[in-house]
Length: 89
Image (cartoon, rainbow, N blue to C red; front, top):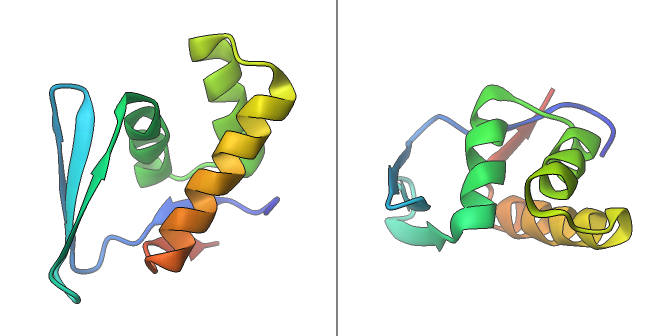
């Protein structure tokens, strides 16, 4: 996952509400809610980011150890990929 990743914008609506993200995949009519730390990653992915940039964001924002930040980033990216919400560039 060294390439830049971006949220799929086609038929995906999302809003940040009280620091969290609520998204609707219009293709499947499925809702997705993302907590505050996920919302930070989500908004960064909206503009495009690498896995390393996302992990660094968690380290700098929440003071996580690098390995924990990488694990959490990987889990988040796997969840988004499983929902077909990511595009690689």
